[in-house]
Length: 633
Image (cartoon, rainbow, N blue to C red; front, side, top):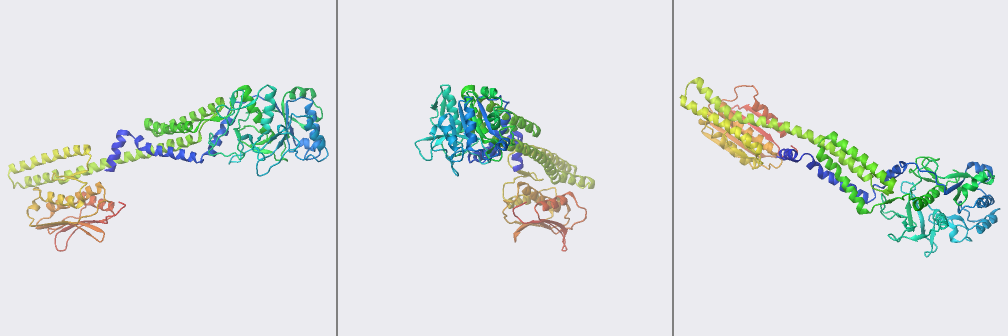
């Protein structure tokens, strides 16, 4: 029954109707996994990959880095670089008239030789920004004598994979909640914008962000792009990093070159009205951060802290002045709508392709289109759209559906073959138990010439009817929704009835047949079939058990010469059912194994039971099938 229903569904709707429910379940599971943050690392990986694949960008001349490298330390012959040397560097830089200088080196207690000189430089040049660290676990505060507008914090937040993708622009002052703290990058950007008569304003659409010249900086919220429940420890405003994708994003000069007055005319042009960042670019300091968003780095997968701040400054200025988009994302509703649309795509593809290889090719092409579209969206408009959950859905539903298609198509073909074989076997059984018996009866009496021709004519007319009835039955069986069985007597049984009722019907209908002469001599006919819990028997098992009973009774009618008694019983005892047909005829005359015997043995193996057909010592033949009714057939 289940096989026929499955085949009908397959033929009418194809595999799509079977694959759609698990495909939808996969979609729901992926969405739930994403909602609890289970896909963040994958989404970060795809974001970094798409950032690396953006077109190369030109050098940003507005930002210049003075990097203190290993050779500078060897040249100074002291580490850390003393305050006096830093003061000398800053004084020299001021002669080139930069707009602002960010000193990305901690100098919070200027008491060493040269400390007073450094403090004086700070006091005389208000465009120099010092740094501090304000977030746990380790706070480092700047010189107390400096005003707030000359201090910027440099705390960088890392993600769970230890990589840095965010930048905290400002946050509440841990010591004074009425006064915000500005980052080093924001302090320097503010100085640059003021020189252009531009001010930092409060956002209109989002009051919690900054607006510059009508452009709001997209801030990272709790659920932003691939982030779920993100918690910036300092609160405030964080932005997503959009690194400048270039082999040389900024001009970098060394401390020794500035102090040695090398290329002074070049530096005058290079540094005038620029933002200058002074910081360590050597491994000994450990001011190193991690990113996979840049294709070319001096340190593979690592970036110096001073370079990181330079990228933030360049990112904001490029957005406000050059129109370069900052990274932002859709809202939750748009993102999950996007995921659902793509989630149904492999199911729809499976509906129209109905082929393993075409399905795989279509899903692969869809994956390429998805990544290309997402990359273009990020490059041209700065929109970070979900990619990882959709790739997972495409992989599971696309590849999984293809495997499912291949498997189910194979199962369908096997089912069709089995169905045909079963139809052939059932047809043979019908012919064997019906028309063949009638034909054998007629041929026997033709040879013996012991009955009138009119009686023989009646037999062959009956044979004609039986053959026609078998044809009609087979036609009906292909159309009916019920499981039925046609006996050789012409009786049609509904197999959804209890087994013991079916056995009564088979017994009564078979013994009423007039084409078996041995039935005419029977004086005693007994039958008793115990009820049995047949929930573990399939319709096919019940069909075959009924055919076994018919075959056993027909053998009595054909071969049990001299039989006066026949007994048919079905006894359920000790968790075993014994179905038995016994007569007191002449016994088995041949040791050859016919098709009926072979089929009975096959049925016994399917039921995990036993079959025997043998002569009795007291005379007669017993035909018995026994099995244990239990789950697992």
